[in-house]
Length: 98
Image (cartoon, rainbow, N blue to C red):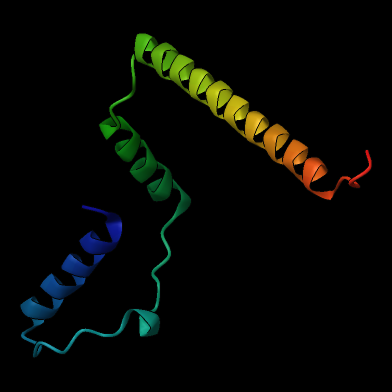
């Protein structure tokens, strides 16, 4: 649950405690954004980062090798296609006597 939803839930709870009538939701563009203090923002970031599942060293090494191999293969394919098209264009536009 992100902080925007938490704030909305808190506002809705306060409204229901006051006995206010439920109002139709305000469009997102018309809502006024509530600013948070820097400390709270940093605490929320730390809380989110604690929930992240970080890859192990072995996973990082494996994924890096896969990326390098795939990029190398695709670079070779693009190089060969470029070379083939260049030779084809030269053959196509070469004067007949040469």
